[in-house]
Image (cartoon, rainbow, N blue to C red; front, side, top):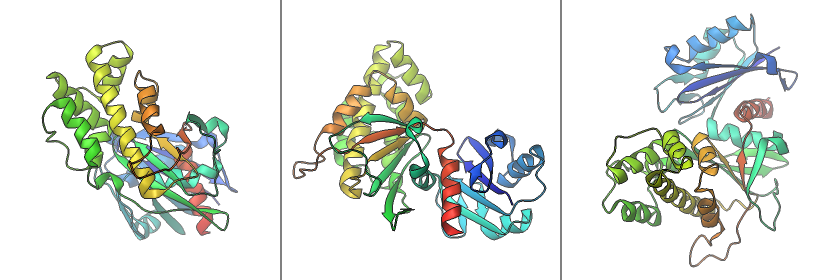
Length: 311
C-alpha cells in the first residue's frame, strides 16, 4: 500500500508517494497554497493527478505548532486533525509532525550530496551525539535531534517565539540607532521578513523581500551589503545561544531559503566568523560542525522516516 508524504510550508505544499520504504520520485508534485482553500483540497488534487485511488497512510510535516493529534499552519491558518484526515480520505493512519522535526528525522537519510559544509571543525560529524536543525525562512524554529537506541528522536520546540537574546537585540538597535518595533520575539528579527524590515528601517526606503535585499547585496549595493552583514552577525549570535541551550555536539544543520541566500552573499564569512566564537565569556565549548541542508526533498524523507519509526 502507498504512503502519502506532504511537506506543508507557508507558501507551497510538496507531495510524494512512498512504497516499500522508498519515495517514488516521479510522483513528487508541488503546489502553491494560494490556489487551495485548505490542505484537503490540495491533497485531493494530488491524488487525482497521480491517479492513486487508495493509500494506507499519510505523513504530514507542517510549518507550525503540532500536538499529538492536531496541527496548524502558522502563516495561513490551515488546520490538520488526524481523525478528520483519516476519515475524509479513507486512511488507516495519519502522522503529523513539525516541518523542522521532519528535517531532523531526515538527517540519517541524507547523503553527502544533500549536505554542504559551512563550518568544519576538528571534530567530525557524529550522528550519535545531540544534533540541532535550525530553519531560517519565512519563519524561524529549531529541532533538537537525539539518538536513542540507534534511532533519531526529535523534540518539539518553538524557539522562534521565545525572547530575542540581548546581544542580538543590541546589534540590531546599534545598527538602526533606534528600537525595532516589529521585533516581538526572536523570529521577528532573524526570519526573512525580519531582514526585509531591518533593511527598510535602516535605509528609509520601501520594504522589499529578503531575497531582493540579498540579491541587491550580491549586486554590490552598499546599503544592502551593510544590512545583510548586520543580519548575518545577528543570526550567528543567535545560533551561538542555541549551542548553549541544546548542546549539539553532533553538529548544527541549517535549512531554509533565507540562510541559503545568506551563504551565497558577501555576508557568508561574517556569519561563519561569528559561529567560530565562544558562545559566552564563561563557555569553553569548542565550535561544532555546521552544515547546510541542500536536498529539497529532505522534509519528505523525514516524513517517511517518522512514519516508519511509528509503524
